[in-house]
Length: 181
Image (cartoon, rainbow, N blue to C red; front, side):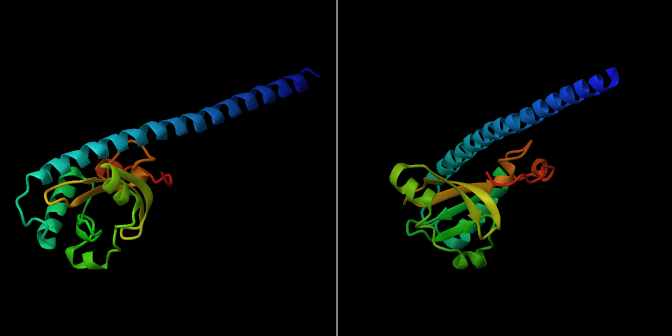
């Protein structure tokens, strides 16, 4: 009789501990993802503003697709993020993830949420699947340069929902994908 009672009490306490730990794990995971995503978003906004400032001082003629694609490649490598330059019509004129020869095949960005928001309010933001690089991405856009071209910085969302890195880097290569942002 004592053995049955001890077993039942042990089982009840074991289940209470199990469910408490499971709840804690799920809740803390969600909270941690929210905090990390906010840090990633803040960092991207900082990088976007830095890039916008760099483009303000560029000489005329920089919008040439060959020059702008080389520029996006260099800046993307330095910042360790995806950098896209888009003209006012929505045409991509440079992308650090896409070779210059394939830029004409990219869809026009004029109807994208972040592009439209940037046109109307200065900074735009969107999360979606990128067909060109086949990853979920966080996009931010801001008007930059004179005459006013557009810059979009982005990175794979697997880094926004995982630990420990916010960017696609050697740190991020150690991070397992956990899904969408």
